Image (cartoon, rainbow, N blue to C red; front, side, top):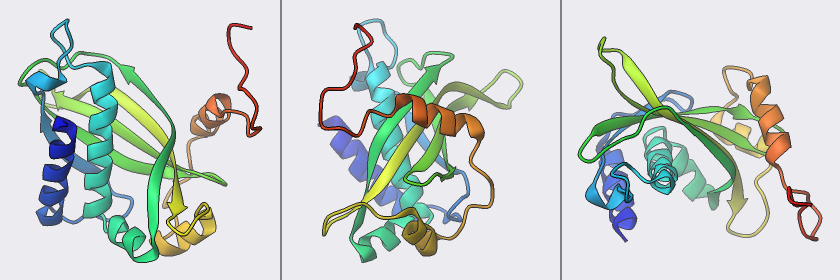
Length: 185
């Protein structure tokens, strides 16, 4: 339940936050709360993914894309995500999530999110890095085609990194309605 309130708070803060361009980096500030902790005294790995959701909503509100989606009856869904950890976040630590849209392929949008804190030299130090692959659905039914999405928000200023395409292909489940293959077979 606390994540609901955290999301609501950040949506309110985002409405008054500094506006950014559609493809700019959004910086969203957080603090590690007692409810984020696992039994080992650091932020639970599942909480990282939930906080990434909050930061993406902040980005979409501040870059104006959320308003465009609401006007058109679109909403985002996560198709796949991955995260890599370098350091643990512990109780009461302040950190920032840097979120940016990486680009598009034929079906999806890719977003990079970095958990950063000031390093010993004062420069940002990455504690964790996540990448999500998302799609946009229409409330009336169906998927928003990428060309429609680009028409609404503008073309990407850069190419999608090749490793992202490879990752997306590797983690995609088969489109058949049957059971997905198991690594245990």
